[in-house]
Amino acid sequence: MNTGEKTSIPNEVVAPQVEARAATNTILLCAGGACISSGEESCLTSLRATLEKYALQDVVKVVETGCMGMCDAGPLMILYPEGVFYQKLKPSDMELIVSEHLLKGRIVESKLFENPNTKVKITSAYDDHPFFTKQVKIATRNMGIIDPMSIEEYIAHDGYFSLQKVLQEMTPEQVIDTIKRSGLRGRGGAGFPTGLKWELARKVPGNEKYVLCNADEGDPGAFMDRSILEGDPHSVLEAMVIAGYAIGAQKGYIYIRAEYPLAIERLNEGIKQAKAYGLFGENIMGSGFSFDLEIRMGAGAFVCGEETALIESVEGKRGQPRVKPPFPAQKGVWNKPTLNNNVETYANIPTIILKGPEWFASIGTEKSKGTKVFCLAGKIKNTGLVEVPIGITLREIVYDIGGGIPNNKAFKAVQTGGPSGGCIPAQYLDMPIDYESLKTIGTMMGSGGMVFMDEDTCMVDVAKFFLEFSVDESCGKCTPCREGNRVMHEILERITSGEGEEGDIEKLETLGQSIIDSSLCGLGQSSPQPVLSTIRYFRDEYEAHIKEKRCPAKVCRPLIRYQIDESKCVGCTACAKVCPVSAISGEIKKPHTIDPEICTRCGSCIGVCRFGAISRVTPA
Image (tube, rainbow, N blue to C red; front, side, top):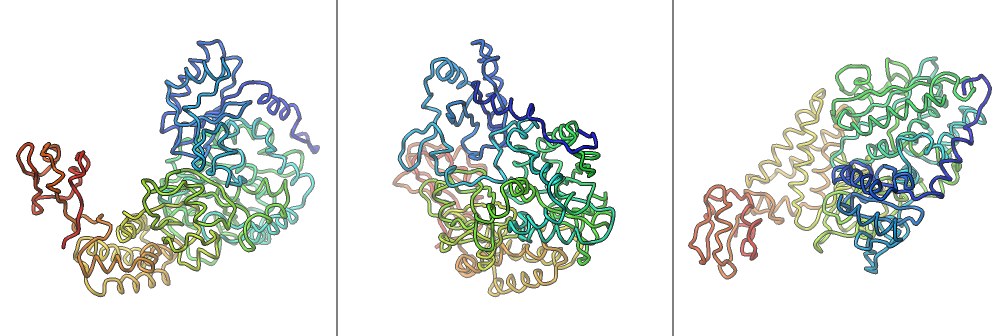
C-alpha cells in the first residue's frame, strides 16, 4: 500500500468476510473476560471436539468474539445464520447443541434466554430481551460480532474506512470541526469537549507531538475500556491514527495496566496486523502522513488514571500528578504538546467520521451527546456491559436493562464514577443520566462504573470502602489527599465500630470540603465525594451509628449481634459445629443459644442454618 499514491482498502479483503457469515454455519462464542472466567475455554475445547466427532469442523466456522454484554449469563453463544442466542453454557452442552441444532435443526430451548416480561423463551436475545433492546451501540458496535484478532473482519465492518476518508478527503481542521460539531465529550470522567481538546493540541506550535490513550481503568466495578480493547482493538487503533493526523502527531502511546493481559495481547496483534496492511507506519495509504504506536504498561496505580500522572509514568518516572497549568496540550510527554483521551472516547471517533457529526449529535441530550458505556455491578440481576443513549433514566437502567434488584429487595442507591463519584439514592430513579444532571446531585458520570446497592447495604460502610480505596491509592504527593483522607477514614472506622462521637459528621463534611478545595489533582479533589454524598442523602444512617450505636442495615459487626429463635431451632447442631469460637451451645434436638460476649459475628452460623432460626439484630 505504501506506493506513494493514494490507495483504498481492497475489496478482496472486505467481500469474503461479509459473504462467509451468510454462506456457512457460524458459531460466535463470547471470549470476553467474564465468559472466559466462567468456562468459555472449556466450552470451546468441547465444541471443537464435538464438531470433529460429527465431521463438521470444515462446515461450521467457530469465532471467538469479544464481550457480548450480559456477563452473568455467560458463557454465551450465537449460532448463525439463524441468530439463535444461547446462555449459561457448560462443556457438556456442546454435544446437545451440535447434535440437535446443527444436525437436526432443533433449537435447544433449555439454553435460550427468557423474556423477563412475557416469560417466553426467545431465540434472538438481541431483538427481544430488554437488556439488549434498550441499547444503542456505537463504541461497542463490533463487540460480540467480530473476531477481535482479525483485521479482515474489522475491515469488513467498515473498519479503517474512516481513516481512508480522513487521509484522502479531509484536512486536519475539518476532522477537528467534525468532532466538535458531534458534541462528543470525554468519556473518562469530567466530560471535557473532545473536539476542543483536539483543537487546543493542534494549535500549539511544535513539530513533535504525541497522542495518548488512557487505558488505565482502575475504578472498582468498571471494565468498559478493558472490554472494548479485548473485543474491538482496531476501533481504538484507527481512532488514534486519525487523532494523530488531526493534531499533527506522528507518535502515540497506549497506557494500559499490566493486569489486562488479554487486552494487551489483542492490542499487540492489532498493531502487527495494521502495520502489515500499511495502516500504521510510513506514508499511510500514500497520503504522506506517518504514524506509529507503542504500548506502555503500568503497574496498576490508580493515580495513573490522572492524565499528568499517566504522562509521568509513560516517561518512566513515578506516577505522580503535575501542577497544572501547563496542561498536557501545551506540555505533555517529554514536555511536548500531547493529546490524551480514554479508550471509549476514541472508540466513538470512526463512526462519527463515517456517519457524520449530525447523526451522532441526534442521540443523547442537548448538552450531552451520543451514548455512554456503563458497567452494571453489585446488587443487580443483569450484571454486565451496556451502551445506552445519554439521558436515559436511572429507572430504565435498573429495572428494564438491569432486570431489577435480586430477591425482590428494594433499590437503595447506585455508586457512579467510582471512588471519585457519589451515591444516587432511590429518590432520583427518574432522573436522566447525563453530565449536568449528575453534577447537580453531587456525583459524576466518571468512566461508567455503576455499583448497585439494595436495602441491606450500609451506606456508612460503603463510604468507608471507597475512601479506604482512595487512601491506599493516594500517591502521597500532596498533604490534603494523603493526610486528609486518612483522617476521614479513621473517623469512619470509629463510627462503624460503635465509637462515633457527636460532631463526627460535621468533621467529615469540613475535612471533605477542604480536600476538594486544596488537593493537587482531580482524583484527590473528588475522593471525598462518596462520603459527602452518603452524608447528604443518608445522614440518618450516620446518626444511628453515632447516637444509637446501631447499624440499621445490620452490616457493621460491632453494632450487631446474632440470636437464635428458640421456636424455630430444632437443635440440629449445624451452627455449633461451624462456629469458630464455640460461642453456640445447646443439646441435640433442643434449642441452642449464642453467647454475645464470645461471638465474633462472622456469620458462619446463618450460612448453615436450614430453618431460618438465626438472625442479625441490633442492640436494644
